[in-house]
Length: 207
Image (cartoon, rainbow, N blue to C red; front, side, top):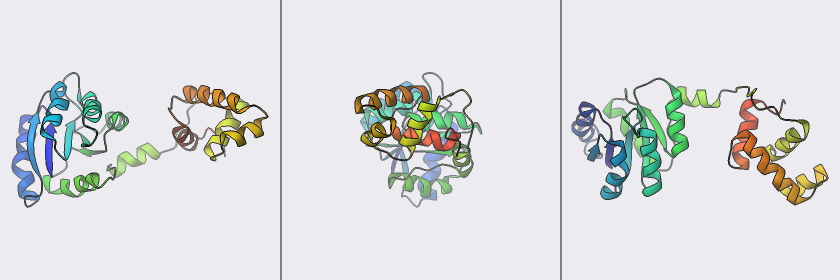
């Protein structure tokens, strides 16, 4: 497993360079690193690693933008964000930017191999605490939907087709598409699947 490390803490990077090959019996090694978030995408593109480890707390443009840039320029490279902070917000932002997983920087080198291999196999890796925080129901009081919007969201969340929704609401399919687009904007999501997730996690449907 060939890794590129994007981190502005030289001691941390050097520690990974020394300990990863030892702790993984040569199965993983750091092939390149940079402490400049702006240079991350170019480095990854040049080295073609299997995976990029990106520290989220870096000087501007920052780790989250580095994640997005890597994902945009080399979509085949898996990206794992890392942070020494307990604040889940940067981790969530990194996942939205395209990271395939998140690991705390407190992880010991010998603990890194299983989650990194899982990421390479196509899994998303998250600490249990962060996953619980993501799945914890919250009430989005700022999203105040009227009765028609709630009916539409309920229909979307239960997987109804545009045709079925049009029949239920007694409107045209074109109107359903227009209403759906407006609802997605209100919920600040980009597709029906995300709208359904919002409905489930925020209690907008009531039952």
